[in-house]
Image (cartoon, rainbow, N blue to C red):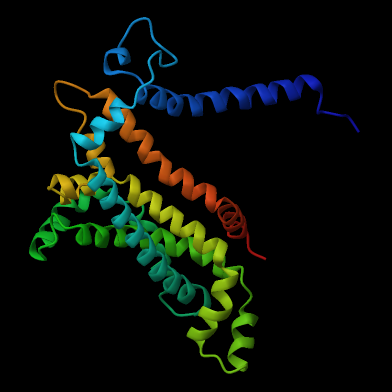
Length: 278
């Protein structure tokens, strides 16, 4: 056999990966460096690739001159609650789609997929009118409710792939032992599905944590805004507050990085398990 893994090919491969990694990491590095610079050094020339006078002034002003602490709390409440509720509802929906055979099943799956093709702004007018009628505008619970509806379709399709990989014989064995179908789902199937559930929850959490369009539309009070809306507030028609914006961006990235770090094994196992059937 011809050995195609030559030193030259390995060098090209690792060189390409190194360039890709540099391109990916550099924006994060630059945001961190900018957040540690004094305001007068951010736009200084020549460009400073390392902060010559490291300072936490941007972080201090972020919390003293804005409601960023409240904004982080709002994002945490909305993203966590919406992610959990959407994952629970999607789990039940996916179980039905995977285990039961009924005439409209294919139509339901198709409807879930079609909803992912429709841009959110198309339904913004009717959605806003409905939220006004329900008195849910400028309400974190109302925003979380919209996020739940947004996350359910794709989450259900995602979890259906995981359920399809769990043998139906487990359900049948549990019911023969006296479990109801719901008890079998909770006590037997879901423990096997933990990687998939973790991957789905993190997907929902990150989507809600980063969402801007609906948050800007449905939340008006500065103390109820989520983080993406707060970040958008640092960009005005006449100025961009680079220091506080960079500091806020660093603090925004940390929770998702920690979450991915804690659940990385479950995410990889879940995505791998749901990739194939059989």
